[in-house]
Structures are given as structure tokens and as C-alpha cells.
Length: 542
Image (cartoon, rainbow, N blue to C red):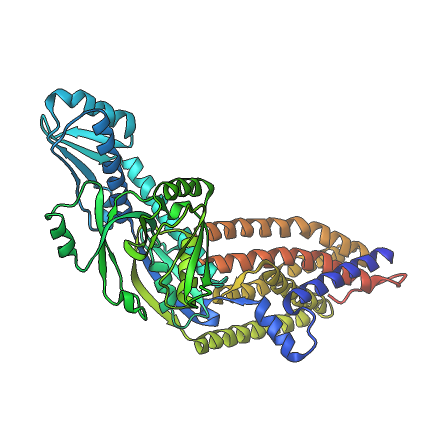
């Protein structure tokens, strides 16, 4: 009897814990509904929202890698005193052409060919060098390196987009490969509860490439005027960058151009944090940033040596602000020119999340209305209730009073499943509801195995208590075998499946684990309770 009390205490505790995970401790009906909506997270197909299909422009990463190699190679050839006429790369425009990136070096002096090859061999093992003729050479990225760069670009883009979306508080969102293409350059972004994804698209698409660079000359009213000021040829290691006009700022009503050094003092890679703030004097919103230790040391050395010179803060190849260095600056700075609190917050968000390694192209946008999601929930619940009622009637008709045992196990299975979904923060989708309905049949299947084993033992002439004990013992390994194989199948579905398939797999695994507890532990406890206090039981309603 004491053992039976412990079993029912465990069952009661399990039910209470699961109910607490679902609804907490509500003090009113409204609070109960609010807690339920907060704890049970619904997917895009049930809650409504937006779905975006993105394509990572991997060719941008290949171009950037080639540009980096060209920049470094120029310095290394200069140090090695290897003269050449020119160096350039091709311009792949599509994903299929990305891995065909190549760098051409022309006019290498014949007597310096050995030194040139040595520089390439020692520093660029990822590239294959081919001689076009005696003075011209072609560098091609190796196939293995191209594949690694492609995968790394997509992975980094996916991680960056996830960080930006999660920074907005959209915890139920998901970003994953679409599975439509072999190279997995397409990403599927699902945003439950987002009816107008315009702001999300803007935040995702912002490259957020930050640079702080020394200003040489400017401002100039036009690019042509700036070039004319230098005779049509820019000084070595400089570039012209445009400053965009700022709304509401009369001093910056039109665009202007500045001549900047090509190499940045610090970049977005040196950022440690970024937060929006409001200027106490003007009331304008701006974005403050904090540099890492290494970036702060470089910035401090530079600003100390260049007091009264100007710095430009560049975001995505456009100047956001230009300021004069009045004193040494260590690890903090600010980007002014934001139009409002939201823009300052969004800028801080994308800076914290990091810059995208390549551009993003929007292929498709779909919206699911909340009413359609509500209809899906209603139809799913209706199907579940009909299935549960049908199964209950069959069990009661076929197994008599023992069918009540199976029905209680089914109800407890559902409570444990939904409670676990709430605790784990799992997102319930329409395929998840399908998994729950499927579990009704699978849970009953376990009870049928046990009940049929008990029937066999009773027909063999065993006493009721002995038949129940033998029935549970013999059915145990069959239940374990069927559940383990199904869990393994669900693991593969979760690893290789899309979001919908993953939702189905998660729901099914949790339900299967709950089913082992309810079909074996709970059902056995109910049978033991039925037999308790009776000296002899001659029959069993099964």
C-alpha cells in the first residue's frame, strides 16, 4: 500500500508540474488565458505571420576574398621588389559563377618570375597559380577552398540574421536553409506574429560594415568636382566616399564627398558593444559603440597622434558623420545623424549582430493571416477531439472497465506532452498537432499490447494479479523496442528536415517518452489500485 501511495504521489506531482508549465498559477480567467498564450508558443502556420525566402549572394564573399588577396599581394610584391604592370580580378555575377573567381597579374618581369612564384607559394596555398605566358599569370581558388568559403559564407549569414532577428525579441522565429537547392545558399526565414515585415527586411538586408577612417580632404559638392581637384587621379591609397544628406539637418541638406584613406583605423570587427542613446544637449538620438581591447589600443594611438585632424564614420560605404579629433580617444565613440530612436536602436542592433559576409536577395515573401492560423488550430483540435472520443469508445467497448485505464493514460499523456512543450520553449506547429493526433493511436497501441498480454495470461489460467504482472513484464521490451526505433527515426527527421518536419519530430519524441511513463507506470498503478484491499480477485474487466 505504501508503494502504491508513492506511485500516485509521483503521478500527481507530474500532473501539477506540467499544468504549472502550461498556465502557471492564474488568479483569474484572463490571467489563465494570458499565461497559456505566453507559455504555449505557436508557429507561423498557427499564429500567422510572414515567411521570407532569401538568397545569400555568395559571389560577393568570393569577390571580397579576391580583393583582400589583391590588397595583400600588392604589399608583398612591393616588399619582394617584384614589379608588375597590373593586377585585377574577374567579376562573377551569379552563384554558379562564384567559385570561378580568378585574379590576373600582368607584366611580371621575367627575371623576377621565381620570386613572384615564391611569394604566391608561401602566402596563398589556397590558390592555384597558372602561367598564361612568360609575363602574365592567373590565380584560381582551389575547389576545396571554394566549397569551404561558400559554406562558411552561408553559415555566417544565417548566424548574423538569427542574431538580428532575435535581438528584436522575435524568439519564435527561425532561420534555416530552405532545402530547395544543393548549395543551400537559400535561407527560409519564418516570423510568427509579424504581419508587416518591412522593418525586418531592412534590418536583415543592412550589411552593417562599419569603418572609422581618416579624412584627407573635403567636403566636395560632387564626385566630379572632387576628382577635378586632383587632376582626375586620386592620391595613392585614398578613396572618395559620399556622405548622405540627413533629414532635419540644414547643415547637411545635400550630399557631399570626402577624400579618405583607404585603410580604416578600426572596423566593425573591433566592436564589443553598441547601444542607442540620446544627446543631452540636442535631444537627437545617436548610436554609441565600445571597442574591443585591441581596437581601443589602435584607436587610442591613432587619435593621440592626429589631434585636430578629422575622422569619418562609414557605414555600408556611406559616411554617417565626420568629426574633428579634439583629444585622445580610447575605447568609445558615437555615430550621430540618426533620425529617431528606432533608427538608432536598429543601427545598434545590426552592429552588435555583426556585418553580413555577403549581400542578400529576397526571392519570395508570404504572409499567413491570423484568421487562417485560428482556423488551423480549430480544425486540429476538432480532429484531436474526434480521434480521442472514437478511440475511447472503442477501448471501453472492447476492454470494458480496463478501457477507462487506457483513457486516463491518454489524457495524462496529452498533459505531459503540452507541459514539456511549454517548459522547453518548443514551437507548436500544424505538423506538431498532427504528431499529437498520431500519438493518440500510438499511446493506445501500447495499452493494447499490455492488455492483450494480460488476456493471454488469464486464458492460460493464471490468477488476476499474476496475469497483470506477467502482462506488463512481457509487453515492456516490445514497447521499448517500438519506441526506440521511432525516436531514432525522429532524430533523422529533426536533423535533415525542414521547420515543419522538425516540429513534427519534436512533438512525437516528447509524446513517445511520455507514453512510456503513462502506459507502463500510470496504467500499472491504476491496476494495482483496483486490486488493493481485496484479498482475492477472481475476475478482471478486460
